[in-house]
Length: 600
Image 1: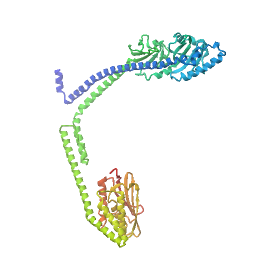
Image 2: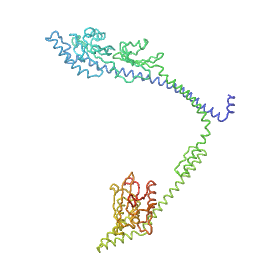
Image 3: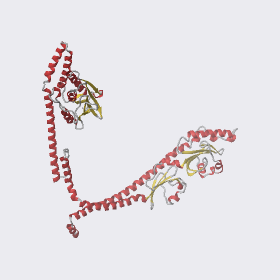
Image 4: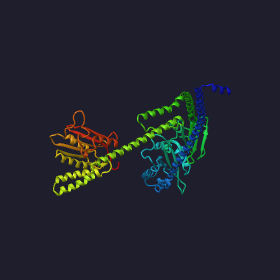
């Protein structure tokens, strides 16, 4: 032990890490793998056996449940008011025996079809034998009957003898070939009862229900609990009724399962462990049939071999990984610094929303927390500057609007308008009304946003003033989508565009100008367009954004101001564009987001 310690002390750090990582990975894996394998095998074995037991019990229960209605149906010839007299009838004492027997045959067949065959889907065929006339008085298949088999062998069959000797008790019959009503013998199981006169105890005949072996499969679901699991249904004579291998059906069970098989008692479950298999059997208390499930042991332990192979492969893989991990330990230490460096590069590119969250409590964690605090202070500073600039722009807007004292002008214009009306100067009255409305819009509307309807009304009054000023030099056409009238937008957006079109576009033209104002929705945005047929702008660039020379009170917000306001409120994807018209003139359009009353 001391030598081992001495060797460990003299090993390099890299080799110590390799040994430590290998031990910490391989030893627990061996222990856990062995325990998990053992627990899994035991759990899988008990689970599979319990499932097989429950499945067998359910199949036997289904068989008993399905045979019970047939027990009641087998009393049909005694209980039915039509069939019972026919069963007691002696045709040798009637005037027309053949005719009457044919009529009775039709009656019984009709009752079989309506009262018996429709009662259970399991029933494949029904035969009622009349003892007095030694003939079939009723059968489910009217198209065919093997008369030769009936005369020579049917009543001598062992299962028929067994039914007749039971004196009225229900007799389940194991697998046999049905040859009376089928053109070729098919494997069936049957239930029969001798028909005894309840008063005289006379033997009147018997009734036989045949059930196709294929229909028995409907009484159970999947019975394969593993790849090689086999399920058998065995009748009271120890013959196989059902098997996944068709060639085994009808053979003695001892030939297939071995002579040492031990069945359970009636209504009980038995688990028999042989050298290579688990054999679970359940017996029916009604028909004395057995449900047997055979599970090979190799199916239970096959997973162990797989797990051992996986475990060995995992050990080899983890041994290689432990060597690689120890060699990369230095890189692991550097990883937090690399992350910190990459995030600092993002900050240098202007991404100030980067977070340096880290679980490291050492020096790297302290640096990350310090940088986080610094970035938060920068974000707070930018927010304060933004708010201050916004307030500054608001004050500048208010100052511009209050320079001409709009309240005083508005009240004075109203007085002049009424004087013009009294004196009959309708033109002056109309101009003053438009000018008064413009001043009223400027004074009374608080905030930066108005509806499209209000902005359009403002433009109608503003263009009316321009029309008076330029003596009907241009016409204005409005193309407004009614659906956008209640949308909201920044106010004073269209006025600079119209002003630019009239002052610059129509200056010096010798024809009548046409001004078109359009507002509509396009690609999830609101488009406001001002088009004119004026002189346009010269080659090499768009029209100037600010008017040359003195500006009046309504051109105080220029085109550059519009661009800045839109970018400030809505972002860089929205804005103002100006270009030469397709047929001359100028087209200026604004693209802003759609703002409704619901979206605010």
